Length: 230
Image 1 (tube, rainbow, N blue to C red):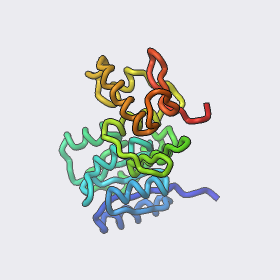
Image 2: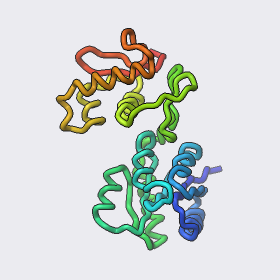
Image 3: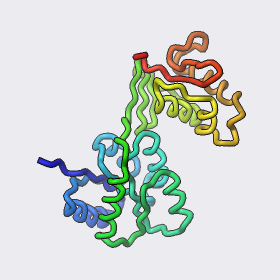
């Protein structure tokens, strides 16, 4: 028996969720719902849907923020559904990783066509929301880092740096790539930023910088996060 595709609706408006549910179920999707951004992120991590329909005006956090958090660990196709029709809003959403942007009110047939296109265009599997390597556990959905079960408080920059290393676990990430991703293109020559924050991370995650076993230095090239399997 062919498994149904799954869809998650993240919208605080009950009538819109009902309309979308009827349309998607009619197109042979199994549908799940969430009313808030945080609930949406949790549902994505748990349900692993094939497509997400995301409203921007959520009660607990802006939908754009939800999208940015999601793109830290998942490539699931995301369609933005919003009453906001300003070009700047659309550009910001697409730049943040949305696959499409549909303005409310929308034509149901057109929306379903856009859903099909987004799903065809998705070339990668949804990323794992939780990374585990030895005592280190990074929960991307919750933006939480634990070491041997104890939560470690990281600054936004430290978290961003760790996220890039985790996404490339076991691989060498160059100084330039790390600087560009975490600090932006203008920081590519500021290697001191990187050294300082890698030192901070090592102290928090390993307790020492003398003989690091987690964040390895590749001299003259960059850094590599050990998975414990090398």
